[in-house]
Image (cartoon, rainbow over all chains, first blue to last red; front, top):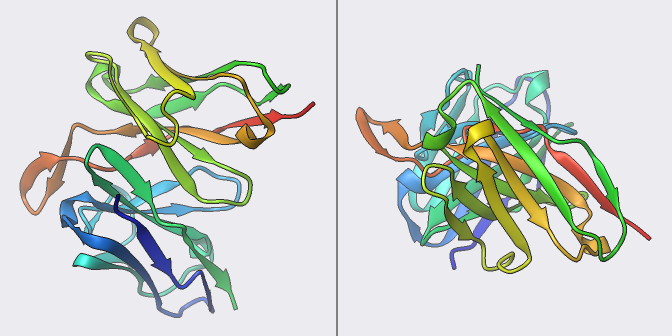
Length: 108
Length: 128
């Protein structure tokens, strides 16, 4: 079973700064199977990125995804006040979906 | 507009059973998988299982196999998550989410492996 490890656990940044979130898989995975979600407090998750780097419909271009193999990154180029939230990576493999434990992006 | 609307919050006693609903609208219900995801208080997301209304194909997470039953009624575009023999540890928010049949990646259509629309969540509280 593939395990996704996200780092850091918490990222403290100011609006306007760049956020770099990491998702590391315990073994190499297909980029097609890697997605990122944003979850604001009290809300359902929202799809941001699929296929490791394709933005979902309506997602601003300040969000970008990259990576391959075991290392994937979600970058928020300039944080807006509404971007402070928890972010999860997700993988599919062997008829299973798994989520990372999440990275909280908080206001510094 | 695509929507997944879940049933309301529930308060149950240990040993009770429960069936949560998720009604899809704005799309062809039988052509999209519906997944269920648990989020315990203050914790992350856990995939529980997934169901294809077109042919009732179902895949359960090994962590939830035997503990839950996923089903759907195509005639009313509604998916269900049944929880049995509830315990305090089942207290959580439960989400349904839609998996599209295909993804458009780098100019090609490929199988999709993500969830593009989510229900608002159903909070289940189990307490004596």
